[in-house]
Image (cartoon, rainbow, N blue to C red; front, side):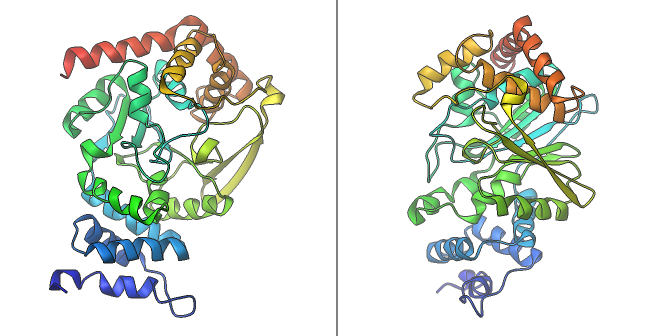
Length: 351
């Protein structure tokens, strides 16, 4: 084997030695292993073996923190102008949605209409779900958030308070890992890390989704190691940040080394309804544009989600006020007007 492939061996041996002799990596080792993989200074066999071994034993908080350290060092970076409110970072699975109609692009527009910046991370259709992506959904609304350089993205964010880190455009080294994800047929640990990694430099409200309850505690500890100060975790639809209107939702908050959980039930706020199934981008486009005008089957879900996030962003004093404010924003047409502003600015300023 080539000498350049020797560097990953110690880390692979450490995590892949079995139930009794295997050990976790420390933060520095995890960061180094991740950089070797991103830079392809490991063989395909080593990369695949590392991913599946790490998945089987589950990465610990310091290992996830090390992976994020590597992404922060090598990956793209954006910052907020001093005139902006602290942005919300929304963390959702990169492999998209396949079961339920997404709400977060519409929630994002309502937040933007209230001068609340939003940052999203994602990519193109990706294993294992190959679900619909952030950029596809925004394109259905009329705005293409892909195809921008990091410099152009920063310019767009400065003027419009919205940023989408699109992996194919902004992080090709991470994009190179997609074939491995497809070939092993399971989400690797990097998929868990992607939920909580953000390239935003500075203070923000960190909101991320998860599926399995133990993940929440692990993410709290990881984000604490990374120095995140304002953390919200959501057991949302399909592991994302969208809240169901057919059942209660548990939202966790971690501050000052202490985690708390609050259960919100839509029936207590007259928002109980049926979560809409995902069928096609054409149907979603129709429903989404209707909802921005206060009509159609996604309206109640939009009011519920926007109301919750208005509250956590400090735009309302409680959830009830947040829901009422969401209704006012929808009825006023402000969110729809902000969408038109985004479309026009992109067309006029960035080819």
